[in-house]
Image (cartoon, rainbow, N blue to C red; front, top):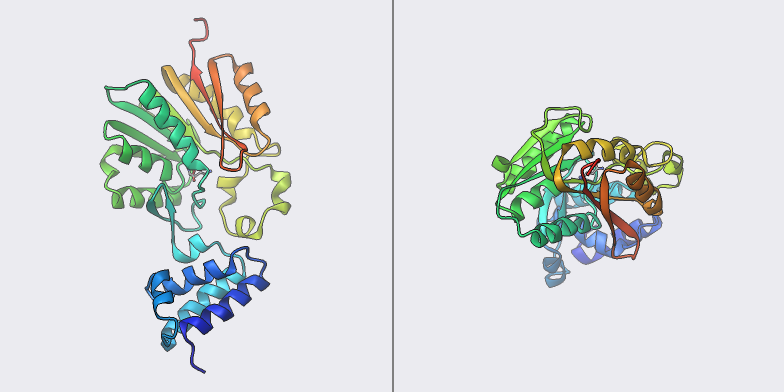
Length: 291
Ligand code: GLN
C-alpha cells in the first residue's frame, strides 16, 4: 500500500486520538514532519507526496511511541523554550512554558534595579539548563551558576549551553542543592524545584508519570520539601537585597508564603500568575535578619 503525507496524517491522527491525546492532528503533523525532515508547511504544500519505505518506518515508530504516551519532546529530542531550542532526553524534565514567567519576573527585577555591575545568578536544579541559558543569553553582564544533582542532566545542560554559545559564562556544578562548591554571594537565585506531591503520583498523566524523571518532579509527601530546604540555604547564599525567585505548584502559594514569613529573613514577597491565572511564581528579597 502506498502512503502519502495525507493518508499518513489521517491514520496517525486516528491512532493518537485513540490514545486520548488532546491534539492528535497537530502532533501527527509534528511527528511526520520530523520523520520526513520537513516542516509542517511542507506537508500542506505537498499532501500527495508519496512516502518512502524508511520514512514510513521511522514516522510510524514516532506515532507508536506517542501512542504509548511518550512526550513529543523526548521523541523529537528537543523542546522550544523562550524561542530557543533545547535538547531534551528522559534525563531531564521537559521545560514548561510557565517557567518563562519565572525568568520574566527576574528580568523585570534586573531592569528595576538598573544593574550596571556584573550580575551573579544561581539556577538551582537546572535540568536541561533552560533557565540558566536564557539568563546568560539575555544578560551579557551575567555570570551564572547552574546546579543539579544529576550528572546526566548536567551533561545535557552543558551541551545546550554550548549550542547557545553561553558555555563560557555558566558554571555547572553537581550538587544536592547548596551542598556543593558555590562562589557566593548571588544577586539572584532562581529555582523551579520539584514540587509535585508524592501522593498525587497516581493521578499524573502517563506522559509525565511514566517518562519524566521522578527526581525532577516530586517534592516529598506535601510537595514542599524543596522549598523548606531552599529558603534558609538561599538566604545565606544571597547578597544583601538579593532576590529569590521560585516557581510553585498549583495551590502552594499560601504554604510557600508562610514558609517565607516564618523564616523571617525575607521581605517584600510577590506573587505572579501564569497564563491560566494560577499563582506560579513567588519572589522575596533578602533582609538582614537583625536589620
Ligand atoms: N530548571 C529546569 C526547568 O525549569 C528543571 C526543573 C526541574 O528539574 N525540576 O525546566
